Amino acid sequence: MSIRVAVPKESRTGERRVALVPEAVARLVKQGFEVRVQAGAGRGAFFDDRQYEGAGAELVPDATALWGTADILCKVQPPAAEEAERLAEGAILVGFLQPLRHPELVQQLAQRRITAFAMDMIPRITRAQSMDVLSSQATVAGYKGTLMAAELCPRFFPMLTTAAGTIRPARVLVLGAGVAGLQAIATARRLGAVVEAYDVRRAAREQVESLGARFLQVELDAEAEGGYARELTEEEKQREQALLWRSVEEADVVITTAQIPGRQAPLLITAKMVESMKPGAVVVDLAAESGGNCELTVPGERIQHGEVTVFGPLDLPSALPVHASEMYARNMVHFLALLAPGEGGAKVPALDWEDEILAGCVVTHAGEIRQPALREHLAGGDS
Ligand code: NAD
Image 1 (cartoon, helix red, strand yellow):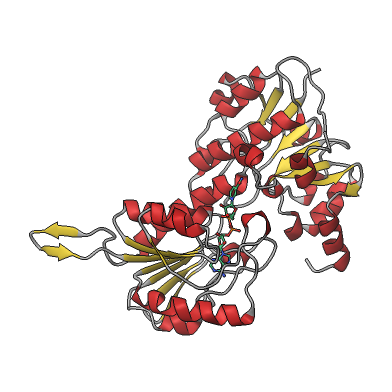
Image 2: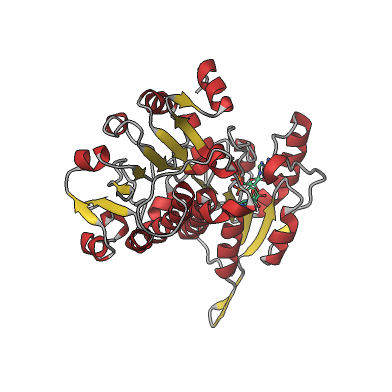
């Protein structure tokens, strides 16, 4: 019998993405998977049921039946407790699970003997690039966040030469030049802004400059394992803020994207720095989900501090659901190929724990929590 892949409708309020789009379903069906999709699952991202049927999926109106008969269930958001309860023992769950933020779910999945894979924990190695949901969704966030900043900004982004005079281009400062930051730079440049950017990893300089932005020089390099940034020392933090102050003061728009994996986002912009900004200036904090890079950020809210707007949008990829879903689904298809390697015909999930990708992102299997760091975190109760 073929492996049964199931795609439910996302239940979290405001989530518009879907884990597999029709194009991805067609590829899986061609590879020999049997794909079942909950009726209406793609509606939020404008993929209708007929497109799924055309791609070879079976539509299932009843969510309980869909969850209970899945060999592999593909999700975007972590499931709610009552959803996870519907999975059959031994089933595989794949999604953006963020296990550190959802300790009760992890315990529940282990108790129910679910094999759960967190797409957000896939190692950032070259072989896994095609499965890298952190990158694909950060690309969406960087783009959409910049458009939101342009919308809030009371000025044009581009330089304009018109009969009514010449308009100076907006000055955009991007803090953190990882995947989201680089996309923010590229988007602001396409809109014609003059862009400055900063990152604690020196390696980011070349990428920033290749996009036509100026890199702010700080005499520190905080690149750590895996190409991520490490947390700065107190003295380094002071130096960083002093360096940034002038650029923050001069910016019309600041877009912040700085993150440190598994930790609170670093504080880069203090309330005092915001108070020194120009009237009408805008801060869009794309790190709001992990606490924010600006002291005044309220996650999910747009606040006015004096004459400066500070916006901490949440769930940005969901605000561009068509392409965010398409990219996520492609990542998912590549990941499923690891679970069931080989072409066509009937397959059985083959979980090769020697594979560093599978071993790196498995959360629970056979009743156990498989990541030592996660086990320690849960045992410590500091969720
Ligand atoms: P991220 O979301 O963890 O962080 C965003 C950026 O914030 C990073 O560039 C980080 O250096 C920066 N940052 C952290 N603390 C800072 C501070 N105090 N001040 C200024 N900036 C700060 O990062 P990401 O976008 O997921 O990418 C992180 C790294 O992973 C990059 O080196 C990227 O090139 C690499 N990467 C590798 C692969 C791969 O090989 N498969 C895929 C994607 C990304």
